[in-house]
Image 1: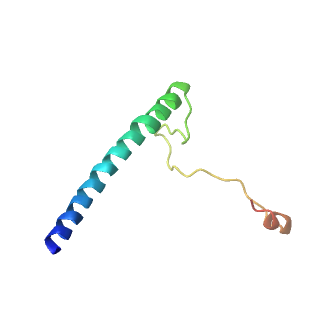
Image 2: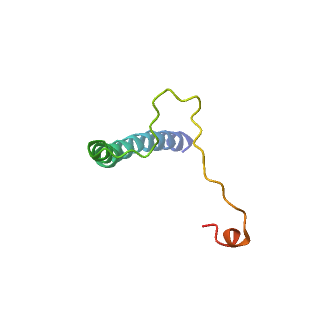
Image 3: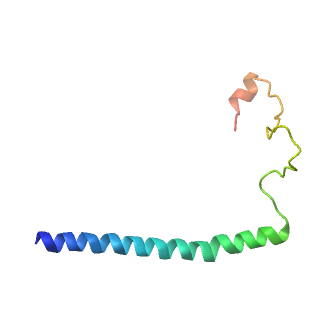
Length: 75
């Protein structure tokens, strides 16, 4: 029975690898690639664009006054 169980575990690992590759390939082809294509064609960018002339990529944020009203409604 031990040999059968070892073979069964190895088959299970192979099947998990194959199914994972299949699921992730389908997810990429059916979801991520069309979404990226639509965003590319529409000109939408989610990350800031840099020209390369910047000394730093730090983006300044506006100062927030730590008042009690702000602390009560942070989100």
